[in-house]
Image 1 (cartoon, rainbow, N blue to C red):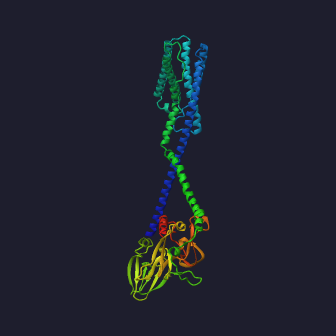
Image 2 (tube, one colour; image 1 turned 90 degrees about the vertical axis):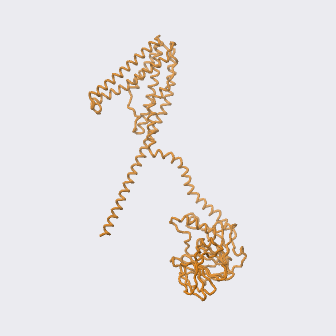
Image 3 (cartoon, rainbow, N blue to C red; image 1 turned 180 degrees about the vertical axis):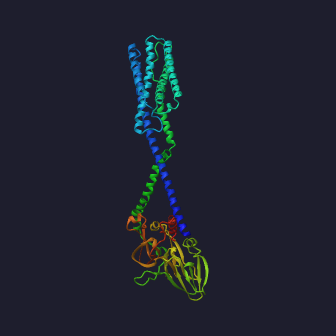
Amino acid sequence: MRQLLTAILRFLLRHALQFALFIVILLAGRMLLAEWRAYSAGSEAMAALRLAADGADSHTAGLAAAATARVNALQKASQAAIATRLAQVQAQLTTLRARQQPSLFTLPLPDTHTLALHAQEEATRRVEIEVLAQEARYLTALQAAVNGEDARQTLARLHAEHVRAYAALQANLRQRRELEARHPLAARLPGSDAYAQLSQLEAQGQRLREINLQAYQAWVTQHGRTGNAARPVPFAIDEQALAGALAPVQQAIAAGETQLARNWIARWRAPVMDVAPTAALLVLSAILLPVAIKAFFYFVLAPIAARLPPLSIARELQINGTSLPLPPQGESRISAVSQALLLQPGQRMLIHPEYLQSSPVSSTKRTQWLLDWRFPFTSLAAGMVALTRLESSEPASVTISASDDPLLEVAILHLPAGSALVFQPRGLVGLIADAGQPLAISSHWRLGSLHAWLTLQLRFIVFRGPVTLIVRGCRGVRLERAGQGRSISQSATLGFSTDVLYSTLRSETFIPYLRGQQALLNDRFDGGNGVYLYEETPRHGKQPGKVGSWFEGVTDAILKVFGI
């Protein structure tokens, strides 16, 4: 019963968490979509408003130049010509003011096409009204000068016009207040008669407010233009007033920019777009640069290395390498799951404790911390530390086996006196040598060999006989004669005799090398009596999918440089 309840609770909890996760994902997606739509709409609206402002600026310049030329041409004109033009200007002003439409410079903004069209029309209308109003004021002053009206009469008339406009505006305000007092609710209820009357009064009040302002500006302008001179100064457009006509457009642009500034997509878009080309270039470099480097190594360096003379360790060490004994004809496998050895008196065995399966009780066992104190780094890097040192006063049968890994097999390799073997200590499990003699191990650097640099094996470690090496290998160890030339994978090579001519051979196909399925170079061994040693299934440095595989690959490359 308890297990059933536990299973039910786990089932409910798992699906409840899935339900909560789906809610979070859907809400995040909805918020992201809303932010993107707001950003897109705001960006399009701002582009439309800026286009309208730019168009209005260019249109303003043309209107101002035309009005200036037209008005200044009337300086010597007759009273009739001035009156005719003034009537035309006033008629145009009446028409432009009559087709006034509700302002679109509000947020939220309408769709982009409608906004761009109406914004352009509204900005043009406001500019034309301002230019015509300035022209009308000047023509009025000019007409007054032509009629012989002095400055005081003109100022008095303009002042009277201002007073009448102001009185009309105040009457409109009183009517609106009385209407709101009589119908406080209906005046704010769309569709009612009171609301319609109030809307009409508000529109009329807006027009009266503009007329009142224009009358005041006409008085101020006349006051400045008419001094002791009989005629006003030459006509010039008031640029500041024109800029004020476009103030609603600029205010809408400022409001839109403020709203966009609060959108996190807009805040991040500019920084992201600034670094996006660099990031794309880095990604492209990360994709193409390894390909270019591998192509250079495969098509340029590897063929050059293949044409170089092979490396002869025996010739460079000036020794006569004695060939190692080979298995019977047709057999190259020298390993088994376990091996039995006979340890003679006067011999010592150094071996990893986990490979020592059984040994006589009478034998003497001690711990030897390093394989050879002359090579501490090599011993540590190869794992030849904390070894068991085994000695016996009588022949002792010892069984060696890889007890910690079922895929490993153990091979016994006897190096007679006078023989030498280049060997990688990573495959060494132990060895048997004379107790009174030091181990004959030496290291040799080959910094001037291109073969060594391309394979990153700059150091060769040589074991000299007489010694018996205990070697491990995944799925088995094989010993073969080099003959007229043999090629194997570098990761499989364990060692080769010093009388072998060692060189490198480029892998046969480029695509497997590019995909990392094959190494750039294979080891090549030549020599009639020389032999080489390798494991059947190399897994050294091949552990894909693990978190530390990259670090392990770097470590393996460093160890390979030191021949380990």
